[in-house]
Length: 216
Image (spheres, helix red, strand yellow):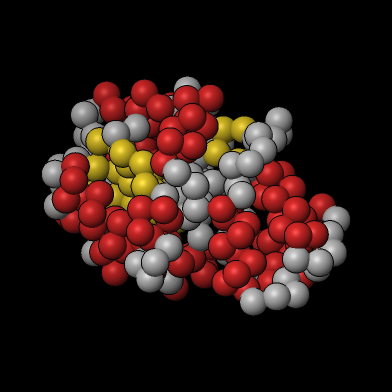
């Protein structure tokens, strides 16, 4: 029986790609790397080659980027279609919901954003990279910690995310891992890195779980 669903946030539940571009350019400017046009940004984002634009140590750059992700609210941010309906359906089946995001911001900032999109009422737990994730820990450990805190075994847990390293984390944690294509990641890359199933978006999660007899 499914007891816990763990979700990534950006490009899984909420489309924040315009904000990503805005903060990416802010970070590039901060380090003197020069800004990138939207069209070029989207192309490199889909290729997973944005580091081509980064002119300093990549770890330093991305730590700065992730720590400033909540500095601005972008009016173009929007829910991935079907996100709220999916969370509601899971809660109706008494499944607990956790959010684990790579943003280096206090969890309280993520809670504010969830409230803005009316998702907070469905969520039981939020972890960010400030939950010691940034200090040598992998998301795998936070997946395991969320399971322990919310009282679910790995066989009672699923993980839904859009990026290939997340698939590796789900595989390492030994939980059923679903890759979504709303992050513009290649389906083959998600699969080869550990995704058990691939769906177009969270809109199709409930039908998948019913098909796999994970929920009734």
